Amino acid sequence: MVRYRPSLSIAAIAVVAATLPVAGCSSSSSKPSAASNPSSSGSGAATPSASASSSAPAAASSSSTAPPVRDPNTDLVIWTDAQRAPVLQDFAKSFASSQGISVSVQAVANDLQSAYVTATAAGKGPDIVVGATDWIGNLVQNGTIAPLPLTADQKGAFQKTALTAVTYNGQVYGVPYATENLALITNTAEASANPATFEDLVKNGQDAVKAGKASEALALQIGQQGDPYTMQPLLGSTGGFIFGAKPDGTYDPAQIGVDSAGAKAFGAQLAKYGEKGQNVFKRSIDANNAVSLFTSGKTPYLVSGPWALEQVRKAGIKYAISAVPGFTGQGPSQPFVGVQAFYVSAKAKNTALAQEFTLNYLTRKDVEEALYKVDPRAPALTEAYDDVSKTDPDIAAFQNAAAHGVVLPQIPAMSAVWGPLGIAEAAIVGGADPNTSMADAATQIKAAIAKG
Image 1 (cartoon, helix red, strand yellow):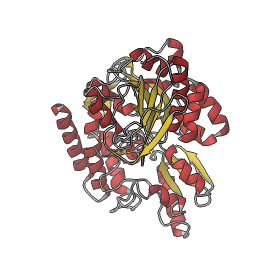
Image 2: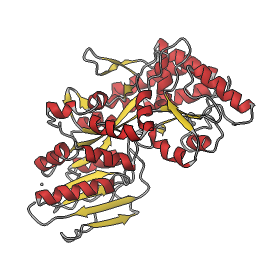
Image 3: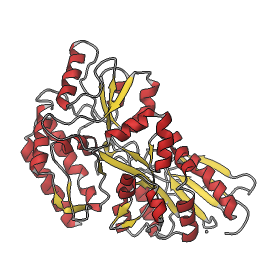
Image 4: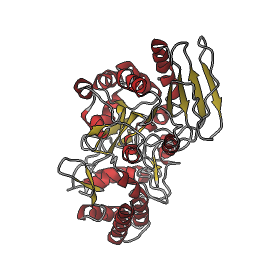
């Protein structure tokens, strides 16, 4: 699958395992690929540390990427990535103490979703896993996560989009804790912020290049295999879509919009601004250099997500965040809204404990705010978001940029989309015929979905 997001979860560069035993009685983590996708997560795996004494919980690090091994004597096991693990470890320790149980928090380095499905099928997976909501369809299809009985009050405490994202086939499968989406980040020393249209953005960027302030009009990652996640705001502007909707508003895999009139209009814009046109969209700009082009002052505009904030802030650039502008005469941009969430395994060792921790600990404001501090994405809990946005205007700006956003599809059929659509986009940017490329992508996607 051609997808990549520093978050649809955050790619961990190391494997960390921590075991938090407490004396007493004995009781689961986008952006799609091309480099933007923030929500998904990878994970190779970690081997839990040996149990420590109840008075001193152990924390061990390892560079191993072997599948995680569950300690059969641990009451509650949580899998996440290396960035979130320390935060969850603190809360898990508190929970373990209050319940008189042992808890292990394991951080997994590569392909967490696949590792989780495989381990769970073998009866060796964790009780709770942390991941993006575009995993849900696959996890449900594989029978690896269970519905969560959130109360009406708990549901009402979350932002509506976040709750929608964790709802699949009418059931809530996760506790959301953060939302993420793309926005336009502007170097205000090089160009005007909040351009009204994409055409204005291009003109401003090209003027900055002509004035010697920059070398690129825009940094929007595409790469050699395309990036449907990063291109989604513009696809939505022209009326293009990936899946249509059923009467209840959920995604319908039988309605593929990649070859719709709106999608073909999007393809025409890719060609217009591609390498054979105005040379604004370039395959040479990808996940490896898009943010650095911006932070080094080589472009006034960057399309990225909150995962880029740390680098932007460190660069000392005066910047502004706004919605990616739509095309003149077309609709507003429609970025994907991804959500990070906690899931309880369908094969949890102790479902009651897993649900108690997930529903009554991980739904707390202090948990979401603590997670925000290590990874600045908007909290899904309204109360936590309200607190954070008062002191971090960037979080509010990203939230506003998603005013017309659409929930990142959670259905399994989405896995058939990333590769063909990305390759079609990259081909068009390189000079291929837009209509033929989009039609071919739709044919491939439909065939893959039909195969199941």
